[in-house]
Length: 113
Image 1: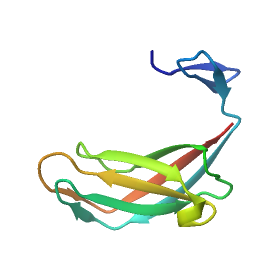
Image 2: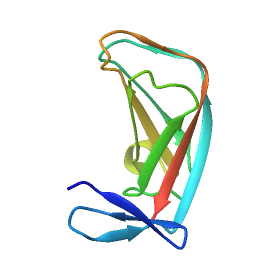
Image 3: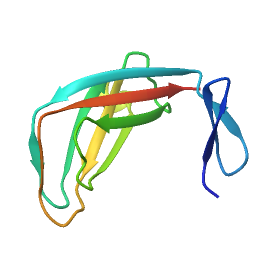
C-alpha cells in the first residue's frame, strides 16, 4: 500500500499505509539560482537553498526550472550538517552517461505538520 493524498478545506492530508493522516498546515518556500553544470554517470551534485523556519524532519519537495534528464532529485533538512534554515538538494545521475544542465532556479517547498 502506498501513501495517498486527499484534501480537506483546500489543505492536503497525507495518509501513510498504516491509515494515519497528516495535514500540512503551512508551506515554507525558498529558491536559489544555480549555474549550469555537468554530472557524470554515477555522480552527484549538491547544494543548499535557504528556507527560513525549516526544521529537521519536515517534509521537503525540491524542483528545478529545467528538465532533470532522468536524474534523481531529493531534498532534506539537516541543521546539524548544513546549519539552520537550509534545505540540501542532491541530484544523482544513474542514466548511463554524463548529463549537462543549463543555468536554473531551484525551488524548495517545506511542509509543516
